[in-house]
Image 1 (cartoon, rainbow, N blue to C red):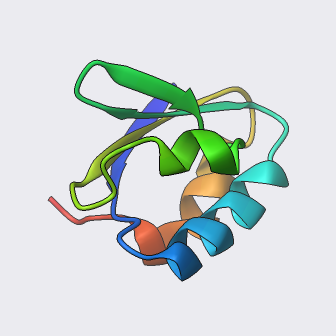
Image 2: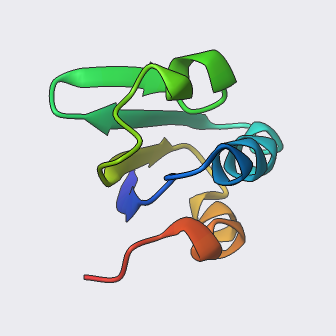
Amino acid sequence: MKTVKVNLNSVDKVQSFNQVVRKYDGDCDLSWGRYVVDAKSIVGIFTLNLAENLLLTINGDGADELMKDIKPFTISA
């Protein structure tokens, strides 16, 4: 399991991020506070507060590859 903060503050970012995550076989969850949605669900993503940074949790094999693919959306600590 890996976690990373992401910023999806525009419709274009959400769409691009969702396309990348959907290619991944493992489970990916996006959370903001106590709300958690499936990162592969574009409708679910739009229910979160996109003005804030979100936490992406990646489960399964290939997490390192996905981390590279979502680099443009990640927030460096």
